Image (cartoon, rainbow, N blue to C red; front, side, top):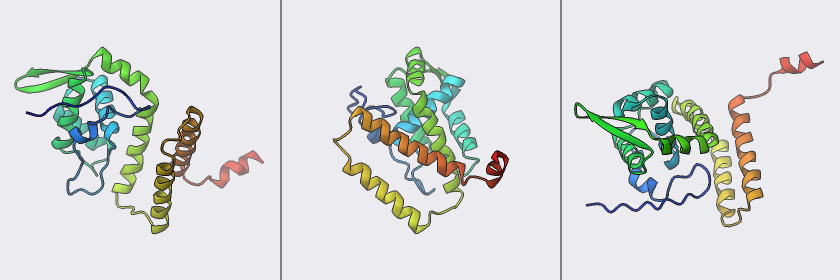
Length: 193
């Protein structure tokens, strides 16, 4: 009998209740990197279910399609997350023919509205993950820069004022967007002249 520890206080936007990562399990399959951060999968599954009620295996297929087939989440990652969402009363599962069909509750829909910006971030991270999973390994220089970024964020712990949260969030989001967009094309400058 497992005890359920998941206090429902939220630490900032897009963060799931504490203990979610422990219960959701890490993606340790033989398919390379861990694709989803703990709160990401919860938000993505909730968004997919809110779009259209579906079964667990439908969700696995939908996520596989999102990744153009280069990644498929294992049931061991999906089902604990669905259980968590159900326990949090964000979705409800109706058993039909032995298979549960999940639909979003009003609580779940309200949570999605509140987390709209976080969900955009999840979709952006999927695009980035998709590219890296296709085999574009990071050069050593990029790997080192990412390490420096992580280190800078760790050094920042405990000093997050509301203004500082917004400043750093914008810096990181703008950087991510610039990386995804790629270098500016000269043609747009020529048109301006």
